[in-house]
Image (cartoon, rainbow, N blue to C red; front, side, top):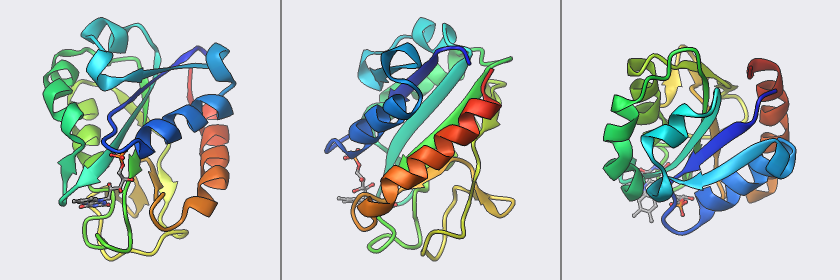
Length: 169
Ligand SMILES: Cc1cc2nc3c(=O)[nH]c(=O)nc-3n(C[C@H](O)[C@H](O)[C@H](O)COP(=O)(O)O)c2cc1C
C-alpha cells in the first residue's frame, strides 16, 4: 500500500484525534501522513494516490468550518486515479436526523473531481433516524460518534482500516 494522506478539519479536536488513530492503524508515520486541512495546499492533495478525508458535521449538513474554506481546493484538484476514503464525526443522539451528514458534501466533491470512493460501511452498527451520508443503503465512509459511542471507536477504526488496506493502491 502506498503512503496515505489523511486530511482533517476539526473544531474541538475529535476529528483530529480520530485522524491520528487511523494513522496508527495504517502503520504510523510510514503508513500515513496526517495533515490539518488549514495547512494543506492543492499539491498536498495531489501528491498522494491514497487519500482519507475527515470532517465533523455541524447543524445538519454543514461541514466543519475549516473545510469550508478549502472546498475550492478540492474542486480544483484532479483526483482521477486516486482512491479516496471518508470518515465523519457526529452525534447520533442529539442529531439523529442529520447524523454525519457532512461526509456527503465531501463525497460529492470527490466524485466531481473524479476520485474513486472506497471504504463504504454498513449502517447496521448505528442508531440514527436519517443521514445524507447514506447512499445505496450504506454510509459513504466511516461514521464515528465520540459523543455517545467512544467505546466502539477503536474496533470501528481497526475494521475499517483493514478494509482500506485491501482497497487502497
Ligand atoms: C452546535 C453543534 C451542532 C452539531 N450538529 C451536528 C449534526 O448536525 N450532525 C451530527 O452528526 N453531529 C453534529 N454535532 C456533533 C459534532 O459533529 C461532534 O461533536 C464531533 O465529534 C465534533 O468534532 P470536532 O471536534 O472534530 O469538530 C454538532 C455539535 C454541536 C456542538
